[in-house]
Amino acid sequence: MRDTVSIIPAGRRIAESWWGRAWVSVLEGYADFSNRMPRGRSYLRNGAVRDILISEGHIEARVQGRMKRPYRIIIDISPLSGDKISGISARCSGRIESLDALVTGNIPSDIAELFVSKGGLFPTPEEIYFDCSCPDSAYMCKHVAAVLYGIAVMFDREPLLFFRLRGINVDTLVRKSVEERTEKMLRNAGCRTGRMLDDREIKDTFGIL
Image 1 (cartoon, rainbow, N blue to C red):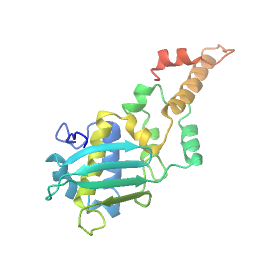
Image 2: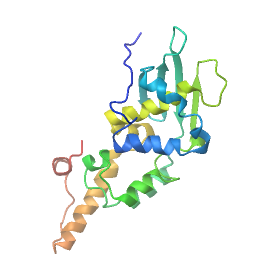
Image 3: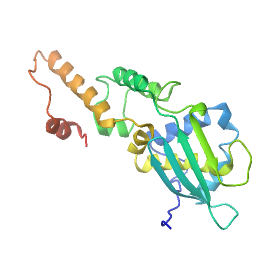
Image 4: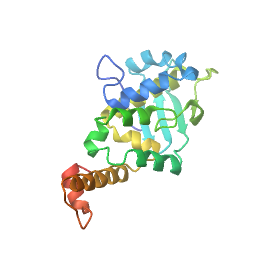
């Protein structure tokens, strides 16, 4: 059996990071979820959410309920289409300064709105499928709701988990934006470059891993 670690918010708010707050705001804004989500807040704050594992399009977690054995929660999220990722990448072209700026949410307001808008990076209710081993027959039980909040806490700890969940190659997204931003800066300065920045220069200059 794996060691378990309770997922508990660090402060008064569920999430503090831009990605964590955006995740909570988007999900709570859905009418299908709005009446169910609050049930999970107390479970999360009381340390009932355990061991959240996030991979591409898939989340597994355990939540301690009234029974001795924790309930097992599985959440699957439909992947972003290639066309959607390409479209968003094109609109971000030259607008993201560095990997650090992206993960901290230090991005232009219109790009932030693009990410959270319908058709952006965040999943819709129709794209989220969940299952819990508890006997509750409700559309969304409090254990699932608690895990959905717990995911925001995980994004606080490691914002890149959002991109892993959504299957987005963050290096490619940032690299393209940085290269085009650099080319534009050089043109504006009256210079022209005969080559693109090589991998090492991009990593050193803009903090891409």
